[in-house]
Length: 220
Image (cartoon, rainbow, N blue to C red; front, side):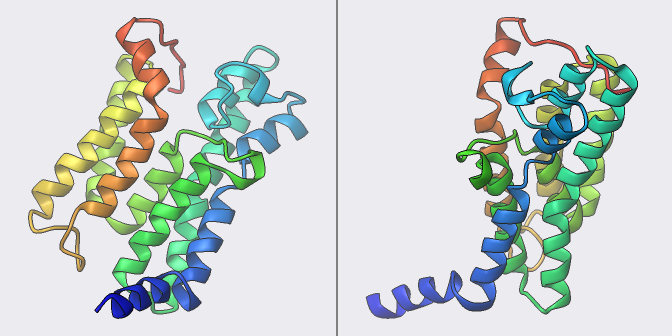
């Protein structure tokens, strides 16, 4: 019994599945915000602003030097962070991966972005990468989350709050649309694990929100 369980666990992380998990982790770990800000903007964003490698900090830091360049690099960072996990999922799906494998790839992609092996296992908050993989796997709840983000970003202009509320909207709408669990895997566990990582990475932001010290960033 124990040997069969261990054998199944090993199979899960080796061969076809294991290769995709590793690729997803490594590709999603590429710190595009850090690379773009340093190579084009001439700024190490890990040493400025919030120290985060995500699009919001790219916009915040570079805005002090060049507002137009800041918006361009911020938008490009957002796009690249969003697609880097989604692309791996689409490739795996094309190659016949199961839905369980696709959701595992999504998890490892978010993990790779948040704990990048190229930055000493530091990284971003996982919002863009998380949205990218969720849009690929559960498009309707993700679009609901996008609309929620757009409204909150427009009204409150606080990136972290808008992102967290949007994530909650995705979770709630997912439970409403898929009451028996996510399509073909019949559980919401992978979504909740991804959400946990993103919320965990936002603990400093949540603390600043509570103390009303969280800064505003105008995206729209």
